[in-house]
Image: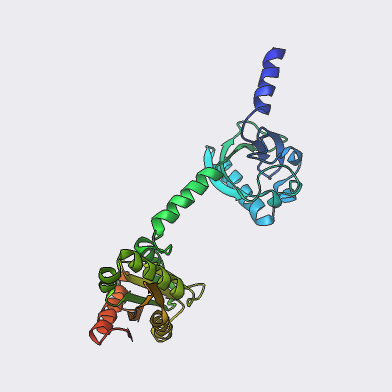
Length: 302
C-alpha cells in the first residue's frame, strides 16, 4: 500500500503539465506538475493564495468566471488564454519562458467539496508553438507573398466588417481602388522582375502615406484597394490624390533608364442605400473606369 501511495505521489509530481486545484472562490488548494522551465514557471508558491492575490483583477475575474461556469454545467470545459510571468505576482524572477505563454486549460469539476467549497481541477498545457504556427498560417493566408501587404481575401473580410459597423453605428467608411496605368507595357518592355519591383515600390510608398487605421490591399495583379475608416468620400479623394502624386514620383532604375508609372483611382463610401459590400465595390470600380476613360492618371470620386 505504501509503495502504491509513493508511486501515485511520484506520478503526480512528474506530470509534464501543471495541474491546479482551485475552489469556486478562486483559492489555490493544490498545485502539481509542470516543473520543466523550458515550458513553465514554477507555480508551487501559489498554493494557499487566491487568484486575486496574484493576478490582475480582469484576469482573475476571467479565471473565476470559467471555474464557476464549469461547476454550474458540471462537465469538462476547455479554454485558451495567455499569461506571462509578469502577470503573476511572485513569478517575476522565476525561471521559465519569456513573454506570453499561450495555454489550453482543461477544467474538470471535482466530485467532492474541499474546505466547504466546490472546486475544479485545472490542467494547463503550453500551446505556444502551436499558436505560433497557427498565426503564421493565418498570416500566409491573408498576405500577398510579393508585396507583403494584405490580399484580396483579407480585403473582403475587412470590408464586410466595416459594412456591418457602418450599418450598426452609421460611421463613415470610404474605399479607394486604384491600379497601375499600362502595367502590361512595363512587363512586356522590361520583364516581370521589373514589374515586381514596381509593385513593391508602389506598395511601400503608398503605405507610408496612410494613417495607422487605414489598410492597403493587393486585390489583383496590379490592382489595389485602401479602406479608410471614419472617412467620407471627399476626404478619401484628398488621400487618393496624395497616392496619385506619390505614384508619379516613383522611379525604378532599369539599365540606367528610369521606369515611370501613374495610377488611376476610383473613390466611394458606404451609403444608407447599400445592401452589401458589392454595392460599394461596384461604385468604386465605376469611378476607377471613369478615371481610365478620362485619360488615366487621375482620381474620380463620388
